Image (cartoon, rainbow, N blue to C red; front, side):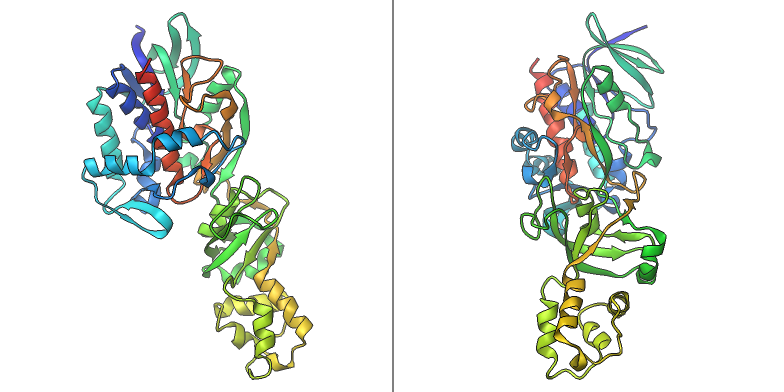
Length: 410
């Protein structure tokens, strides 16, 4: 027998639970559906199990979208401080780490428990595990087809996330629902993901696997908005880089991967505090060491040697014997190392999905589809993607609240 609710929220992750809690506490009869057996697995594994639940610096410029102004409304109406107030209300201890990132002191389970409690406070009904087959219009709103029977609801919220980390249950259901209602989808691709290089070209760097250092990394023109900035077309970050057997990873690469376009280079400055060429030329008169030993003062020794050999320099050559032109070439190789990735580690290693439901199809105030009254899209399903460091969770909270408040007001 068909069951009746005011709102069906499909997807019990960060955005879905937030939306369900707000709508239910606003007086709506809400049912929350998810195909998973374990609740909010992406929250559970985030931040090394401590959940990087927001970033105190979250602002519209920290997000990518084909429609970059869309996120402003939701983010301004529900800020990191608003979510922090909820965390404090539930007496969850937290700490700030690198660049405004907030983590639980104890466990990500506390954030999941908090969201569950907020849902229970509003009387949200849970259907888990429950597989959704599709959504169609009905006389009273929508019919949601599930493996537990049909649901008749006035409103549907799609909070199914993206394609990232399929091993914990990611699917394309949200995009299929959107397409079924003739809503445009911005092409999806992995974001916040390690970058890879083809075997032969990367072979000289394989022995460097495990080396980490702080770098500046850029794409496009290389002129982002400062060392911690970025724009919609190019990025420029100062973060840690990690060499791997297959390519490059670490926060610097995860950040730049969202801006990188296939076939184009990324540019690495391995010594961002130093003009390497001018420093080496200035040292020639007094420095009697071998070139490899000089560089090893500033870079990990294995990396210094690898860069020298990779650029046809003899690590045992004396600095004093090097021509200025050769040292300028070396300086460029260190301060402006341009390399072209051949791909990425894909959705299996991506933290987020770029692209999704075109925000030009949605109301920025309510997250409702403009041409399908009662159908809402929130969180990662939408073409809004944040930087690494708690920004994507803040979008989940903000977009979920925007839809939840709109539903409560109907």
